[in-house]
Length: 150
Length: 158
Image (tube, rainbow over all chains, first blue to last red; front, side):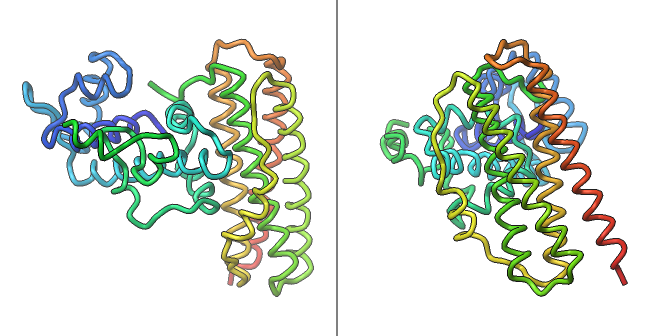
């Protein structure tokens, strides 16, 4: 997945959590990059009309940005589910984060042919816990508890 | 930020395992098509050759994984998974198109993996140059595979 798609996915997830524009700081935190790097990439995405950035408010994805972000999120879900179902990786969340940049969408599509992904994907992804809610039980993540804590 | 570097034996082993699974997918699909679809001898021969080549690639990747210091899991069930989940498209165009997608996907995977290793400053248990040379050789064979299928498709287009 290229870096632009990783940013779009991060903005999408932060917007889901914050229920509004995503702050640059939160996007930078999610990707573990500096705010300056995040600002630079957000500027590039804005030039491509994938998001709109308003000072002091944050970043909003455009319709085109949302589509790409959801595709990226779906690829990420495929990687998580593949690691768990096929390679039986217990710590699939951490490994999915590591592998995400190296797994292209065409590769993810092929991996998708041998996993049992649900039709509601990627809406089943829980932004708070950074895991598909349908897989959370496999790692002991309690999504309902995390939701209730908000 | 670009394609991030591979930074450990464990991560490298995991990526090589994904390569093994992709080869398993190519092998299983090509073999199944060669055995079941209504094809002429030329296409059937191409699919059998592709299946055999993927089996070789899988063995070569397995050999690389074995040289790394990483805990990996056995996944003998992958082949059964591929067969169970795969709904065969047996018309002629579908078979060749599927084969083309398989070869292109494998090619892209090796390209991204090679780039990630080249960008990495990590020291692996396996010699980096030998690792890259083996992966480049496999990638080159995938490239030839793409070309072969494309030529066959073009030669038969109405």
